[in-house]
Image (cartoon, rainbow, N blue to C red; front, side, top):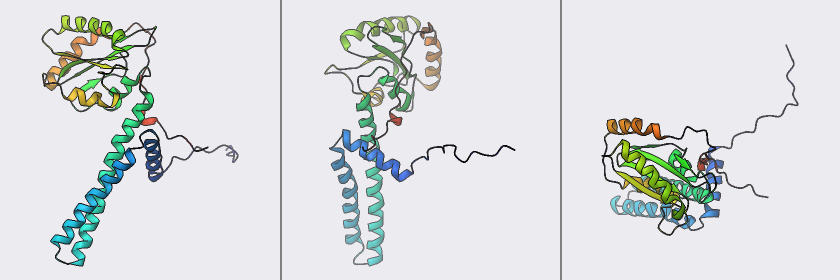
Length: 238
């Protein structure tokens, strides 16, 4: 048998859960300094409320106060992690804001239940890299323009006309993500989709998706894929 080379480089060890959380915290704090105060408030708020309730309701019982304090500590940690998760996601999206494929990253990783979409746009401008994405869900069909509205409006309208010819009775909503003042930020795309009035059932979503699948780009164009914000790491200290 061949002898194993002891000088072969070892695979890099994955950081532990605590270290990963610390890296996420550092990245979030760097791109969103105000998040530190929100996380601190999220931790101390529930802790203070629960401990106060414990003191009032335990009537001087030390064991009861300790149990209430532990519960408050756990509640504070939970709220802290929830705020950290949401702020970290927003900070990660802020790093890819304005880049081609950023909308695809959101559609790939952050869509809520009841919506389905691809990270690959259905239309793209080879010159400007502006793109149009499509999502199908309970709120009907959503077309998402990535880029300045002045450049993506025509692309979006062309897609709307194509879809309307195939499924004329399904609502088509439009979202613009770009530098315009009234555009939807990356971290609010999923929330905006959730505000659309319910139009389709699960079976209808499946049927509509199959009907409009023929419109997908199959020409082999170099379409930018989404950037995965979950893989954004905190910068290493120099």
